[in-house]
Image 1 (cartoon, rainbow, N blue to C red):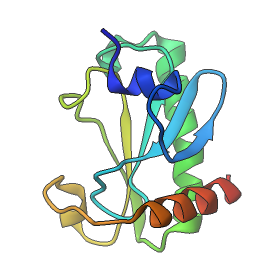
Image 2 (image 1 turned 120 degrees about the vertical axis):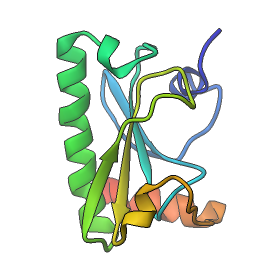
Image 3 (image 1 turned 30 degrees about the vertical axis):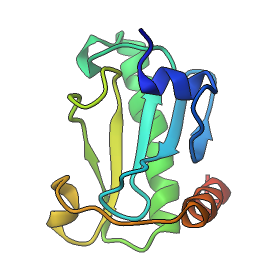
Image 4 (image 1 turned 60 degrees about the vertical axis):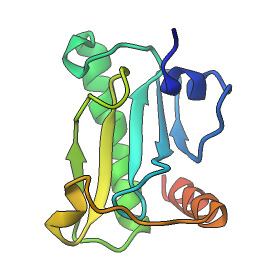
Length: 129
C-alpha cells in the first residue's frame, strides 16, 4: 500500500508544494511545529532514510539544503533546523523547521495556519527558490 507521501507525489492527495524536481518534492507540513515547517521527500517510496541508495540520500540532502536556504529567506528565524524522525510515515523524509527557540523543534508545540496562510507561504518560499 502506498504511503500518504506517495499519494501526494502521485497527485492523489493535495499539498502546499514548495519545490520539486525529478527525484524530490518539498511541501509544507499541515501540522507544523512552526510557520514554514517543510517536509522534503524522495519521490521514490523507501521507508527509512538510511535505506536510501547513496546517490538518492545525498540528493535528498542537497535538495533539502536548497529548500532550507529559501525558507530562511522567507520566514524570519534564527536558523532552519533539520530533523529526521521516520516513525509517523513509512516514507523517508526530512523535516525543515524555521525556529527561534528550541521548543519549536520538539514536535510538541504546533502552530495553527489557515488554507490561505499555507498557500501564501508556499508561494513566498517558491519565489525564494
